[in-house]
Image (cartoon, rainbow, N blue to C red):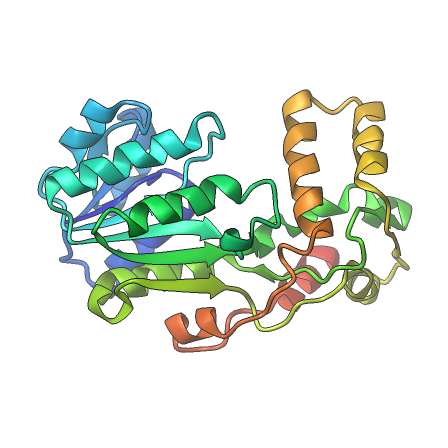
Length: 285
């Protein structure tokens, strides 16, 4: 039995879809917090299991009979390490043979304020005695528009980068890579992968691509994180949006996403889809 946590999220659902397409007879379960949240995965043909990372007994029950576990990192930053520990300890107790964890790019260097929880979780997994595979993921290509603000309307893109290059990769490619590990875990035992697309670019370079795709000149302006946050506050953005945006901006400006490897290509058996295609489709609409 394979269990996908966070199964109703976009990465979890995409991974289940990939697994079913590879082997329709595979025994797959998805962990969700309620039956309503599991309706979509049930329609796909996966078994629904109810549990919450915060609720250890529910996780213990959900992991019964599971051999391969995909632990998709919690979207809640509150006590995230403890959430993950609950799942990992339950996996040990259930006799899980292999755990796959979705971490963040260069988590061990802790270049981003988002990576401390991931690094701590990685260490806990490595010390657990479980066979593991760790996928350190860069930011998803599908998130790219969120970084733009009103750039396509105003012609000015103001975002902190400190001149650092940024790598984006498709979430759908990440899901396919996860499915490939799940279907052949022995080839990936105790491996750590840094998953990126084939090229990193500066935001100034992305602005040039946006200009070409949209037919409108987009000028990139590298601003400080504080200037960026001040702008969000002036625009009346909610506090939770400002917090996440600030953390993402620091991640970019500190160079946490300035890395290019061949790991994703290796796991896919092909070149990852190009972020250029996404930008041209998005900006050219």
